[in-house]
Image (cartoon, rainbow, N blue to C red; front, side, top):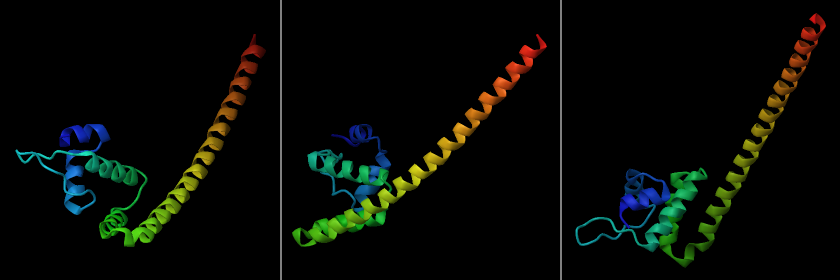
Length: 131
């Protein structure tokens, strides 16, 4: 697949894909005889993983470390797993913070809705008393 096709498939810019390749977040993408990037299945899996991790807020530095450990082979399995566990923990904390914020917003919205309902009732009462 071309960089344009991958860009559309994963909703990631071509510039970002090139950047990820340049800094080593995805392995060097194979090229066709014309020198154009030709993303294979393995490259696609790496793009998908990096996109997912970045959308989750994982820092580039952590991903660079993860990929470097991956390249070391099986001897780094525990270290890679630990990075994923740490990143998961951070993501859970973010989700909890977001849920707290969402709950607070819901409460405030409910207060506005209750206030508006009372104001509307008062307005109806005033109108009816004039009739």
